[in-house]
Image (cartoon, rainbow, N blue to C red):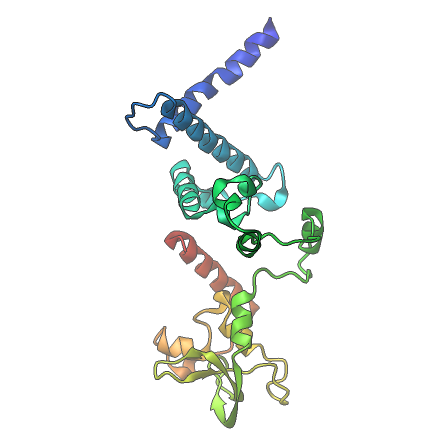
Length: 255
């Protein structure tokens, strides 16, 4: 009797919370078709359950890597809007989820067309355990998505005359052809320099690093309005402080 009473008192409020979230889903419209109401109710239940799973993942109790700070966690309404955007932009032809291959829009296509639309990789793929092991330590080889950086690296060009590096202010013979200044000219940056004074400089990588935005010599003059003579090369503490500042700006702006 006590166990039943304790279970009732600890869980009876969940129905009220679920009803409130179902109401906030706002999946309602008038229709003569009797089966639309239970179908919409089922969709709303899926959204509520998905948000409950999201909240559990954010707590970090299931996987520590999934933990999200309370201020960064999405609210129910934000989660619903993101979910709606993903659902509206998705098409079964992409065949990213199980069951898509059974949809009529896919079965009516030719086999060649299905193979072209499918984005799922055939053959063996890395597992979650292998990925977690590779990202476990700070010395891991995996540093996050670098696709944009790779495009900049592919546009590195050599200069026949010395140019002033946009990060450190010293002469360099390499430029990033993808980045342009106010006059439309490529940005001069040291890229793996071998000179005595500049050997080991990370100017190219720092210039394209979000955490270092505003710390370069050009940025301090053109963006912050400081004098070039007042600029000094930032150390790791300056970069850490600036990284925290940039992170807060990104969170506030929702970028």
